[in-house]
Image 1 (cartoon, rainbow, N blue to C red):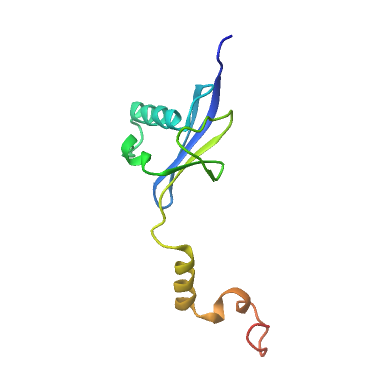
Image 2 (tube, rainbow, N blue to C red; image 1 turned 30 degrees about the vertical axis):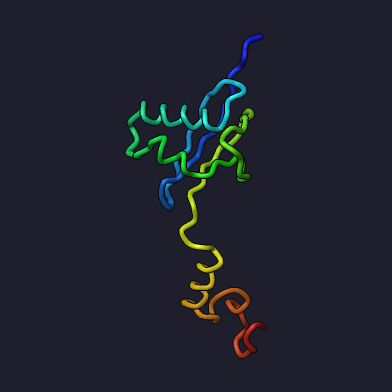
Length: 122
């Protein structure tokens, strides 16, 4: 029996607001690590992009499939979206507290659309 190729999507981001996405045709039974190697090889071959993509820079990111973290040896299925997650630089809870402190309570959350003359929070 002949193994068939499957289509998967590989997505990564080396910086904020800069997402790279490519569709790859890989053999059935491929792992996340193999898909990453194929994606970097294809990206380097096309050299039309201005990205500094290297295998070593992407291997330190956490892999996931459809938003769920997976190990590098996870076998991919047809139409999977393999994502590589950068580590967070700031804890989201801390960032929200800092934004709230900067903006003040009058313009955010429950207090954004209050009727004139009413008490705060209503």
